[in-house]
Length: 479
Image (cartoon, rainbow, N blue to C red; front, side, top):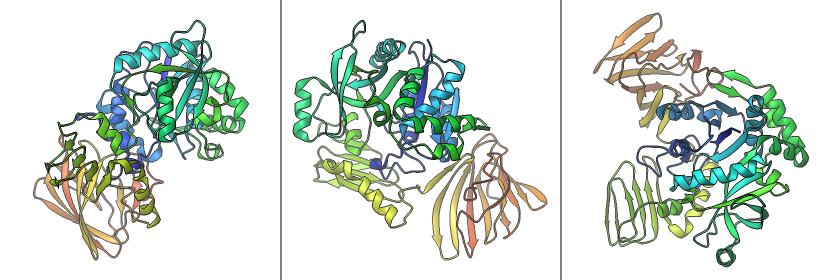
């Protein structure tokens, strides 16, 4: 019986602001590895697990090209890239995957994983998959319970029930418990009957859909309609927006796992963390003798138990302890590690004040490359564009701005009105207001270009698109 990995890639990671932002959340960042993102780490650690096939990945529309590019970079050919038109939590997402996977194999098992967790002991993870698959083959809905090594208050817990007959290291689920206070967490730790709720599952698609029909029929009906009316778009499968929007928003725990009699828990020690906050990231990194974690250009004196990350500038710290200090191009966070779970409050304030720092970085990624704001003022702004080899922006025009393009490195093929020109290093051109234009990199190396915009309105929504390689005709705000 095949095991179909299902990677849920829709998280926003707000407690890891300012590095994680809604347009570029933590699963796409290199947080636990120097050469792979968290999504890539999730996929790579599946290699070598028995009977595990190519993954299905579910993400939202805004992140689809990020997902596709990060999979391509590590040589993963997904079975399916499914786009959720709106966020409806994990139960509808898993239901969509179960329905799609069951078309090819009604008895398929689903290995449901978040895209932004850290697991340090991959062999232990593979052994846990093998153990849980035996339960899933019997029609059980298995989850992985992390054996706690500290009285953690940031996780939900699962209390184990009776050992299940004929299954090694597998227990009935006694109870799901919300995040406890410190005293209760200590009691859970000492009892050895409670596990951290990892949010990872190995379950029979057939059994899950049958239980969903019993406990949340509205979810199942909406998702069946959304999958039935789905459509292909390039390499993606788009769920029908109207149908999927009608599904209640509910987690798989609340929808099924807390109600079903088929639930099972497999205890496991595998160096797991959901990396849900800066203090959790500090915990899993190697530390200096003083308990510090430094990344980037950091100078520190008399510093203890502190995490410092410098993205763009040198960061100096003197005589501090138990802090998280994170510097990015447009924001600096300083927080006591004991308050790291509360960083979301800053994100909420940014949203309430209609600021953009919660959503986008100074560097904004597009399917063709990226752009980064360098300077801005009255009636002008300056950007640095990077266009990947072989890629092109949409054929477009602007009503309110003109643009100057200066090639820094690489080769640019430019459509300007009825003419086509080729520019190389230190050459430039001018795009008048209202002129159809397109930028393309025909070369084998990235194209670096400075764009100077001038005009009465410089918003990203001043784009009329005539042609686009990425089928983004409905997205007026993206180059």
